[in-house]
Length: 423
Image 1: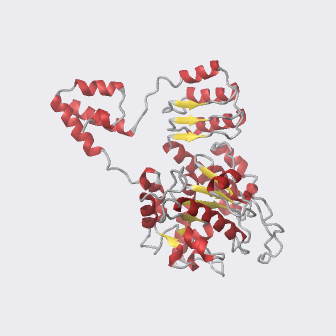
Image 2: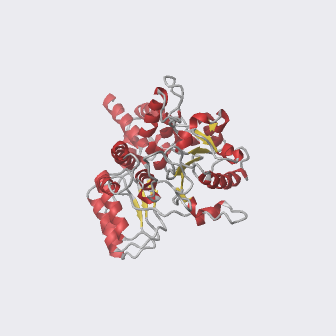
Image 3: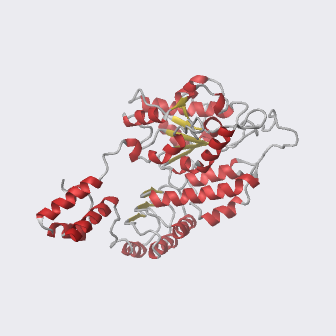
């Protein structure tokens, strides 16, 4: 194995490696070869490993914390679905089935994990969609995704995360069993992962039904939650955390059902959702104070915590974020820069092309670089903004001497250090 050819190395490491005696070079190569992982499956490459703990069967409790629903089942059923515990076995797609479909090449929309996550506002305390209006919209959109991917990969499958179907819900008496309660708690602890993964697809339903709450049923003493999607605590969390790095977020409330047929490109154009700048944890908590919760005492602190955990986890792992064509101004750029300064990031490539930034927005990014918030960043693309060349040159001066901290390079340098000490 040629270490230099197989991994991206710093010039210093290459020179040091070449200067070693041939027998020591061979020892380094053997050591690195043992440390390098086997080629990853596509599921692993796209970040699927992060989702697996929530999808694994737990023998102690007899189920997994989260279950994904087979998109085919949703489209075939023709009627709204009950809670998770009342769904038949064929409604679910297993982790193994989802991975096999993905690894065989049936990938939905570019580098997707073939998982679609739905964000929506509940309409009744016991049922988020008692009239089935959401179900009809979701099934129609899922069919568009399935038809698109199956044009080339007939056996492709999609898993759907929808909380009422995917998490353990209360029964008619408002109770869960001990096992259901334990699994529900575990699912809440990982709620952020479904919305922060770069390679899930998030569908938002942002509009309440026309005439709501007429015709809906509420327990005695419970008043309808008339707050719109944007003003509800959980919805605000899901919308903000999915904006951090998820590549595709759609607002399917914008879908025009009057169209006789809709292709995926048309759906993507019609349902474009926009993307707010990510808030720092303290800013998010302040904004969350004004949002509506059905159970504020139970949910507020948990939602604020999940946002911070999700934000920090994503910025600690994601290497590239593209924020192009979003109509962002200096305000959004400054918000992003402040969040990066507070949280830090392993980001290597940041693109903000074709927005509405001026020198002020670029200066905020320079500040983030200057204080070390982006120690691994080597590329910031700002083409198509109103930023003068002097400011761009200043930005570039903070990037030009950076050396990437590739995991492979660390492995080689560690092995090199051991070999040098042994020699």
